[in-house]
Length: 305
Image (cartoon, rainbow, N blue to C red; front, top):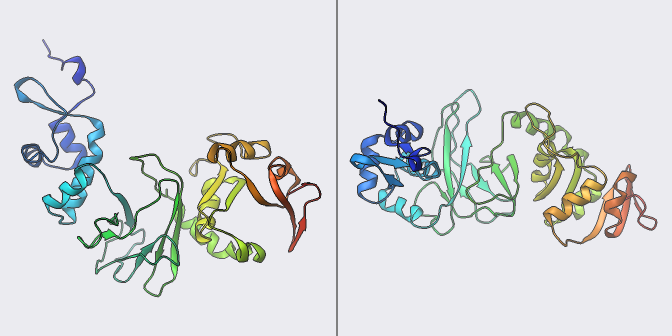
């Protein structure tokens, strides 16, 4: 005879399973339960503890904070009603890297930035930084800014003030993680060589509220837009690893669909394009321009913009 857990516990995790998934020992899980820091969602026969999968995020947060030697009372601050934004910086090189003096910021002009203290992560090691202006200063690894849910830019500067990484973070739902997958380093090197090809006129006049809409894979154009401080990027949804399309190609009329999906009721003041295939978007703009080499030509009755 075998005993199955009650139906409402089928999708729950036993304390052993939860411990294996989170790396938190069973003794510590029992202790966190006793002090009310992380309580199991349900108790079964013989007072067995059962955790829900959504509690894994809370456990990961607690584990990360403990690794940073954050005290339990400070952890309660994060656990009592809100979870802070967090940033994970990984040493992708093959050698130790000294992070002291490196900075994280949301733009090159950002006044509120996080300066890394002395820390030397080993190859493959990750350093966790919480982005929470309400708590910055309480711990060494808390940045004095948060990330905008509607989309943001995150930049990493070396001690000389040179931007070495720039990530354009899309709009994210609550409790959503965004990460740069393998291959990001190659993209960064590609744009180091090719970012200078961005038209001079646009470098001079681009604004923070600009929207870049392209048929190119979104993962390809995001790093360039991040380097320019452009927060809103819409491209073709392509899997970076396989090259497989994950949705419609962002071309022609689909650009209009994507624009209105991202900005319901939005309006376009100026629109620039080097292709007549963008006529559907040009028709929405107050003013349209056709780019030919270094020339920017006014659109004739919104033709080709």
